[in-house]
Length: 118
Image 1 (cartoon, rainbow, N blue to C red):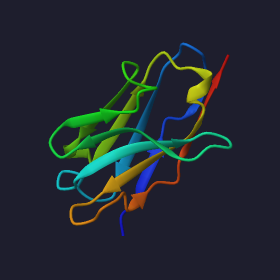
Image 2: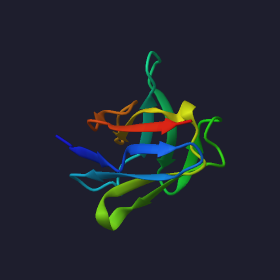
Image 3: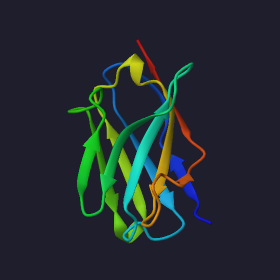
């Protein structure tokens, strides 16, 4: 079983920045992808950013140019740098792992709350 532990959430004013971290209990070097998802109140969970095998990255249109996903394989950690935050970015942010040989994100962290005040 894989454990993913997120940290770095909190309360920030609009226009501010936060950096989320996700520490994995196993190597992230050999997985297909690592991703950050978020769930806003009353909405479905959505993929915000992912980093696929190698260092290919994908972002939701709503965060392009503001968020950056990165990985440190030596530390088995994935980061999400969030700049120019907006109230619409408020939600619970989940880290997830997409192993090779599967067709989806199979492992999830417990989530970290991000609240952006206007």
